[in-house]
Length: 411
Image 1 (spheres, rainbow, N blue to C red):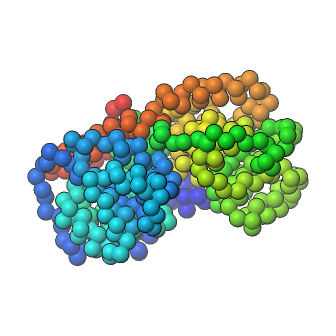
Image 2 (spheres, rainbow, N blue to C red):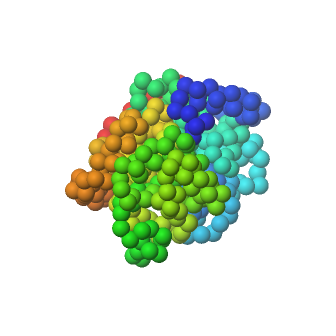
């Protein structure tokens, strides 16, 4: 639903139906007894992605930056035991790191209670390998969903969602079952330590033509809907000699996209496909592109921050739903609001305008270069401070016997 429709009210209804049918609240373990306030707030992070995965690439610096004097961190891992460099880095950030792959949801919830977790943070939502049943059993007195799922979970046992005022504007609060913790910049954590390979790619070795403007979109192919593809074809028509550089998820998708280009009267050879590479090289090769074209209604999320970190400007069209506003959140937080449009017509016009006026695009590139290490988007330590302020606020409400409520964290 998130990738198909830009309708947050309908997405909420779908989430409620799914939650009620698949993961209703379980009364088996009973209510969690209220505990008194502690000097340290125990935060549990629950994920299948504590290895080389987009979530860990985003979260690593934030986890390292947590205030050990005020927070005690527990990692509950239910993903593959991949002992890669990211697994080693991530696991070292926790006071206690537990592999719970072999445990039932109820067992994990019981263990969480025994550990005295105050705030349970679900980093998966309804994404691949999620274990929503843990939270239906009740892992902690306060349950939060963050980062993994761009929308409401529609479950009455999820108390909060971490967001910002771009992805969830105030007039969209009713589209969420959860109360909202608004961070002051972007909700998305990022890692300023991410490495970009020193390898210098040539156009020839990646299959790009020797000359001509390179539009790209390295999102997963499922995000490319017909309306977006139509916009891209009109943009290619408007910029002579330009090409569109796409990620090749699989040969079938690439063949279908070429076929659709031809059906629209476009030379299918103007679609170039990129295979997968190690992350540091994937970031480095993006420097060959001129402009990243975002998808709608499901934007580039981690893929957008990848492009921005590599110095590639991202052009987005902002919709109504959380998933359709993530790239706008990132662009605001890196000081490039001029690359945010609100209609397909404006999106297409700006893409053609930037491709036709190199100096204008160069201005955005220079601003991105200047802002990349100075703006809030890639400051993992700053995001950690703001997220911690959110944890402090929701914990204080709980200790005061108050129900969850919307909270805005000042900058």
